[in-house]
Length: 549
Image (cartoon, rainbow, N blue to C red; front, side, top):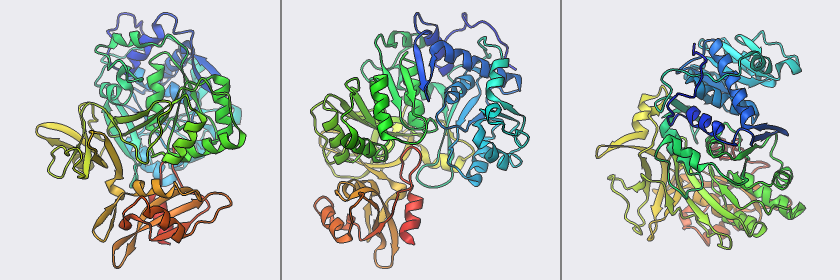
């Protein structure tokens, strides 16, 4: 069990707990507002005390270095508490998708070997349903248990979260050996298959995922831990996280700004676009991140129907995690003429790989050209050579440098994804791309969902972008369906714009103006809604089932 001691003499490292504690201790930061969540507001000092109390509680029940702790939560201040508390005692916080059903939960809990889990009162029955099959699970912290009057008898060592914090000491815990080699794990469901845990050294995650002390991409990575204090913002900056914290990008960007002394707002509840714009108004939000059209299009619709809103404070809107259609982006650019627009790409396995920025007044093109590539990110051909710009060769996106160690408990998948080329380790995310004449990179999509039709490869995201630009299409996912002649047939699963009717002939004619004939959808399935992850990512397994039926 870690001892509780003074931290002033500890040598700081790139461990996220060390960096956080340096920021909190810096002059004037403790009193700043750090977090707004569901109307509840916390200063940096508040978050530090809550994290210390939770860390000490977890230590008191035997949670220590290397133990995996489940964050089975929607957006809530307890998510930030749990991340920081685990980092402090060298435990490993694990994101758990709150939409998983029993079998998926059982798999993740066992695969991670969770020793403890933090969950809200209304998830207790779900934890109880799998707890008997998870021999490692020995402690459950339940947010809101006392208020909801929930019976905790069905979960291992269940306690009320707030009561546990109140009873624990607020002093800062220190664990011997805390440093850059501690682990950071992010579970990803990907586009297919069961969730997999991506295992990072925490120092590599700081540089590869969490900005390296340079979230604005203006100053370069810090060269020593203490330099992060020079990067603390000296002006009001508020970041609004629309995606759930269980999503890698929301975690990463929220941590980026907390390590810069900014304010973070977590969106709570269902996605209400009007409420989001009202929050931007009220909180004077500076920066906001969407995840593809699933978030951005409702925001554009709400602006057109209920706007304009007073959002002069919003000078940056970014998108990542799923493609944003050019038409939707142009609508938002019209609404926010003074804002910079940024597209980013990366994955749980790679960290942040590249970005593309549009200054105010620059119009979005049909395809995003990523012209700011992270150091160590390149496109390789089939013989592991860099793709020649302008060659038209489709290659694999590869990243070296700050990359993960492995997949957790998956040596075969690790060997496929993390490879050695000319003596250097690379991660192959599965993204396919071409390199333009100017060296910019255009992503085509994941190879794992590539459609092979008559020997030609079709990348769904490329087709989806064109399909969704049709005025009668509100949302769409493109998949391959078995076909006797072509092997697979390109099929569009479409949610129409309210009041509109989509026909295959009209959609195909629209697509032929932008796509080669073999990429044009040969079949159309109309649905009332498109299944996506809570972060807005396409569910290709669901779409293929619907299209096949």
